[in-house]
Length: 338
Image (cartoon, rainbow, N blue to C red):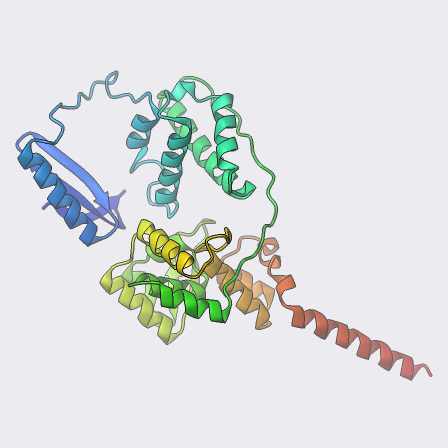
């Protein structure tokens, strides 16, 4: 069978594995959707039939198979490092972006100077928090390589950046209408689900049918490592069921369609207008509806209340109500003593 459900450690990943063989040659790959997998299968068959596929056989001796460059190690780590985690695709995208900045270097040639060059380039348009996520990915990857003796030098210290809370960018109701009108296909449904549930992009795109129940979505693997259940309306249930039936868009497809919508809305200059705004929007609307912050914390799966407290100041009505209550109490106290 050329296309089959991809598994890692016996667990379905939601992706599709593609394997095509002709004689002694075999080509393998993975894709996010069945449609993409069928395209890759056709490309593999064409490459094998035309003789364009690589003909050299891989030697699996211990010496020959040990990767020593960044690209070789990334290929070796694929399917092993971060396996089964929702952050897997993002981590490998970050590694490829890092390689694009510092070059396909020898693993032992990645030192403090290369880290400095990386930080300088990443600093162009990225926050300290985003830079730290790239550095964390690189650090984990290099430690993994060191443990397997692909790298022989100690992993260099990372130049961690200061992180501020940053701007909480949420989507207004009129803006939401414009956004949904500009999005195409199933991506609009993904955005609706994200705003209604506050689920992260990776949590939505990796959903499986057994996680969806009437009134609930059960998330077993999350960013902070804790499972949680998210309440949903009948409308959101129908939207998720439709997405699962039609197939979730890939992360790259989602980014592409979001950029098109962003351009159509004239928001290319707003660097904070990213998909994560949908999660901020859900949190903001919960807080503005006077939902208890502890409930908001549980709803969104924040590990600490400090993360949730970032949204507390957005409910101006609760602050003015508090002032009114305090003034009334003070006036009543004065009347009692006069």
